[in-house]
Image (cartoon, rainbow, N blue to C red; front, top):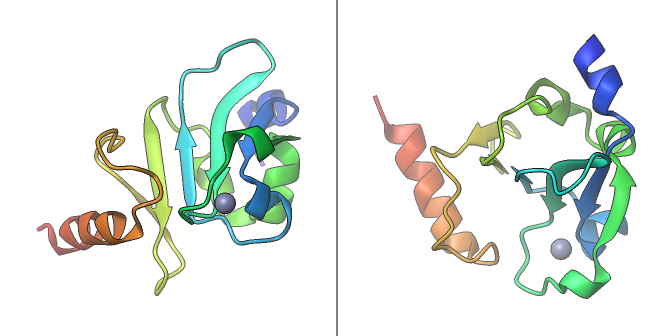
Length: 120
Ligand SMILES: [Zn+2]
């Protein structure tokens, strides 16, 4: 665990209701933090039933306890968009946040993931 993480582990992160209730995190995305105590991170299950009003805010450190595999990525730049590969269980960094693609659209995300994996 590095010092930078120590500095941000008390920052807030948004979890979708499902992740907060135990579903695995499938999508991790980082936006520009909106305030000092915001990490900018959102952790989502990737389903198409997200309701912003039911999202929860956790400390980033609590999220890492839940999903330690995110730790190497936690200092990623803003606009990072990571998707967990269902086979390898590794986090795959998307080239840029696919703003035109609804988060809910798993098929699109999988298609993009395939493109990245097949890239030379
Ligand atoms: Zn969800």
